[in-house]
Structure formats: C-alpha cells, structure tokens
Length: 229
Picture 1: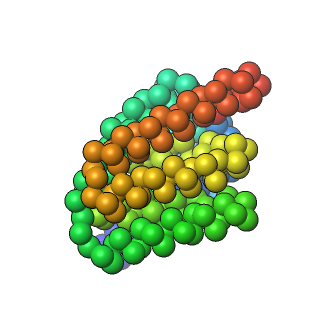
Picture 2: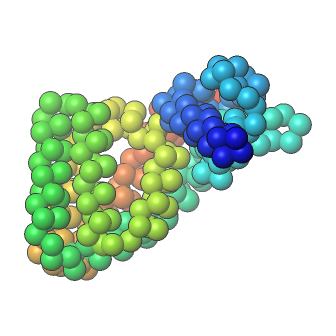
C-alpha cells in the first residue's frame, strides 16, 4: 500500500505541475495573479499536498513566487528580468552554436536542414505555432550536436520564463521571415564547421531579439499594464 500511495502522490504532483505550468505559460492565470493550493486542489479534485509540492517545483523554475503573508503569485517579468534572461541565453547558445559546428554526424546535419526548412514553410504561411515548433526542433538538434544536456535544461527553463511574451512577440513583429534568414546564416556556418562565425551570428541574433523585445515592451506593453508582464 505504501508504494501505491507514493506512486499516487507522484502522479498527482505531476498532474498539478502540468496543469499549472500550462496555465501559467499560456496566460490561463494572469501575471501577478494570486492562486491558492485549495483552489487548484478543488479544480483538479486532488488533495492540497501534491499541489503544494507542484508550487514549490514551479517556484524553483521561476514561474511562481511565494510572497510572505500573501501567498503564491504568478511571476511577472520586468525589463531587468529580460536582460538577465538574454545575458545567459547569449552566452550559452553562442557556445552551443560553436560546439555544434564540431559535429560531423550526417544524420543530425540532415535533421538541422529539415528543421530550418520547416521554419521557412511556417513563415511562408504565417503559422506562428508551426514556426515555434520548428524553432524548438532546430535548437534541440543543435544541443544534441553540441552534446550538452545541462545547457539545454538551463535554456529550456529560461525560455519557459519568457514564453508568453515570445508568442506575442513573434506574431506581432512578424519576425518569422527575418528570424528564418538569421537562422539560415547560423546553420550555414555550423554545417561548414566554422564555429567562431556560428557563435558570433547566434549572439548577434539573440541580441537583436532582445533589443526588439525590450523596445516593444517599453513602447507598446508596459505603459498599459499595472502588474508587469
């Protein structure tokens, strides 16, 4: 019975975690909104214990904030947060591009080209969801080529933190076509084995995204919100 209860607890914790993460990333809960373990437990028809465990897990990932005497708050992003996120992304993803250029695996090279082609097709039809999926696939291949799982996990968490901004940013700015070209130059350098060039191009690409995102937030978003984004 003990093992059964333990397995059940783990399952319920994962259920709560998956539900909360999906709601947070896709703005089912608004930035700055407070939620309670009893609220989520009632919604999922489970006890509060696995919900609290999921809360703590999401806190470690930067998606929930526990405020003294107020409870659990959906995280908000400031311009300083964006700067920090991209400082780390530029360093890590630039290094990954350089390292990926050392990979000689023809199958991974083919997967990289296929992912890039999928990005172009999605951009052609203005399909933001398909473009984001292709972009995710392309970067997954780069991490596999570089052979660095820890870097992948770090950047995946950072991407979760700005995910809800990214969706609107890509769609509103119509960045898919321009980003496709930027990725194309990066991939050409990687496949040519030019790690130094690939690193510079990746860093330039991410810094350009950061500059455009911050400009958009300053001029279009932040003047009209009270609790952050």
